[in-house]
Length: 496
Ligand code: LM2
Ligand code: CA
Image (cartoon, rainbow, N blue to C red):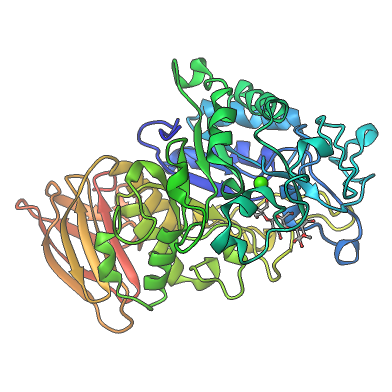
């Protein structure tokens, strides 16, 4: 489950948070395949709650996606036919689909039955009244939950003291499922196998921390291999677990590494702290296994700067799209430094925590599509989508990530709030996190002689650099001057 089921030089995930299936299909074809993105993490595709009275009927929060009503593929992002078309079209251009699966729980206690938006079960409406808890759309009842063991919320102190309560009690009121039951496992296996039959590559297991690793092991053991016509013979799905473990808690990320990877929140925290100038960026040349708590071996971690949850914290303890160059430096470093499997966040603009994705007025449920600026391929702000993954600096570092696949970091230079390293024979990366002084290098790049385009300030277009040019001599050396709060990155895929 550790091994990404992606094309071998595309070990990079982009989370297209709340995107519609039709838009993702087009994005795979028109953009992602050209920049080394290997997989899309999609929002949960199952049927979820809806309601009509939120924010005076003008919005529907993003978090409805984390309240499953059934495992039918019917959601704000689209229906089963659209989902299937997306998987097919993305696979065709070598971009995989990773599904966010919500297996810990169903809806929140007390969520009203009889929802009447798109995605409701219609004739199989659920009832989430405490003690009743029936979900005819999937076939779960109160006996399939952890109510007997714990019928109240996880308390803050449980995170320090009780792994049992973290796994058996309700996560903010959400009806907690018993993954130890073979009946419950069977229903979940049906769901996961359905997705595999449609051609998905793997799963992000939501709320992984709140389920027992041993139950997950048994659950996934009953899940089929991914399709051999797409992935080759005998391939297991790629799986990573949402486990927030930054130390000092009862549940450890290390408990999950036998059954897949975990979301390494320690990576984004360390890089963001440096990017926000609260620690020395030069120290990150050691970021990897053993760097600090939770940074386990390469094959166990999915790394990211921010995710859809912590970008909404007030104030965020990580860098996010609102941080401008600090964010570009953080994501740029993640994409250049060879550690773990990186995931790029792609957001919509938001002002408040709960705010849903861009949508039509009137039928609030209808998400609207991103629109693109034809001159530079970015998303138009007026469409409401940020599309960090299309920002020139980030997409070109994504390409750097692809081009340098498998090349070790060598010739590492650690400066004061600055660092630089080669990706042996494939690329060179230098980052300056100072406000006032340039970071000047006269350095061995390990690259063949030639004229390279800095892909942070520009790119290679019609055999010319639109940004800075860097000349590498026949001895592999180059003079590089990195401006304050900036990056210089060159690679063998962008050479004149
Ligand atoms: C996750 N990872 O482990 C997701 O990344 C995170 O976004 C999910 O929480 C969480 N697990 C559960 O799937 C979000 C959101 C919560 C929201 C839940 C359920 O952060 O605020 O809770 O989804 O939709 C909401 C309300 C909360 C209410 C609950 C139950 O905010 O006040 O609790 O629904 O109705 C009474
Ligand atoms: Ca649980």
